[in-house]
Length: 135
Image (cartoon, rainbow, N blue to C red; front, side, top):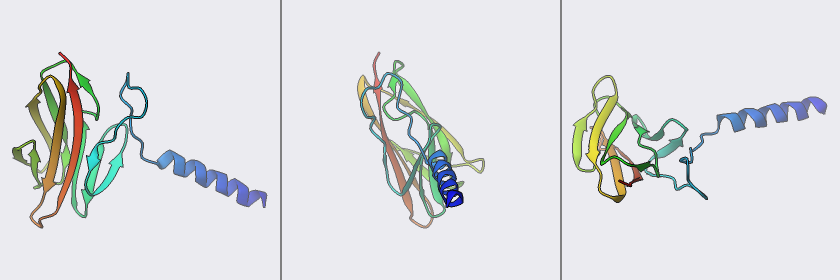
């Protein structure tokens, strides 16, 4: 019986350590909003990912709810090679190394950033997040 209890504790610890987490931006109070994701979502301290079959997109920067003093933001991440990305109306093809970067201008206040990936099979995944520009 003690062996079963010990195994249950080990399994519970392992599962809690492997559970995806979301970082709450520094200075945030209360509950942080999560980005809107279509497809299967995964959150970690390092990225936000949306996946559907072989199509995936992972946003490294910016973070959901981030407050930025500058008037532009670098959208960086990774996606399935050959995927077509549409980031707030700007289109780019993901290269074989899977990394992408696009600089977007910001207006004062809240800015919505939508990253949509699509492939030749007409699959789509989308991540929508909000950042705030405070000059």
